[in-house]
Amino acid sequence: MTPPASPALEPPSDGAEGERAELYGLLAALWLSAPQASLWAQLQSAAQASVPAAVSSAPAESLLAAPWQALLASVREMSLGAASDEYDVLFAGVGKPEVFLYGSFYLSGFLNEKPLASLRTDLQALGLARDPDRLETEDHIAYGFEVMRYLIAGEDAAVCNLEQQRRFFRGHLQPWVDDLCASTQAHPRAHLWSSIASLTAAFMAVETQGFDLLEQ
Image 1: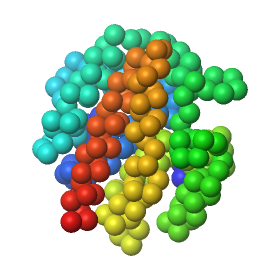
Image 2: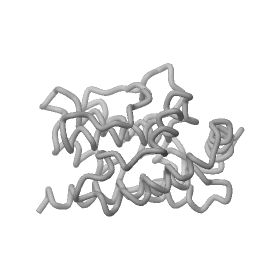
Image 3: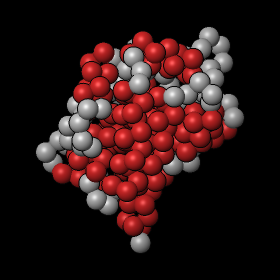
Image 4: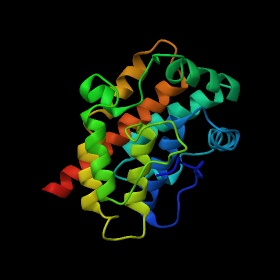
């Protein structure tokens, strides 16, 4: 399991599933670290353009379009240096960060607890493993989103299918990502990442609705 590359903001050509994967990839990149210069340039360019299809396609339009526009408004008001500073303040402080990005913290109150062990078991069953060169553990939100992108866009149909997406989302993202978003939005220093959290929460709601329909 490798860290996300900076995704293009233009949706891929393979329809709604590709657009879902693209948005997971974008959110993974935004939560993993301060934006790289290439991604920031794409966001600045998108801030001058209309809403891309990845966030405007029905039926998700009403939930995703407004937070996407709010994110782009935040980008217009901020420099890359200021965005990097905000990320460091919120998530990369020495010792205890202001906001934790790890599922185990929200599910158990501690890092490296049973939720992480359960996640590792499920990742192993999917044939996925942590990149040993990365410091982040597998329950980092960016890696969860990267797993979802893989389960949507990967070529191995035995693993990359709706049922595996549903299981992973229900077990390892839905129980805690909203809490992370709320913690981020409540922080007085969060500006850009408050907008990112709003878009993330809206996308989680869209995904939850989709999997609810799948189970009916």
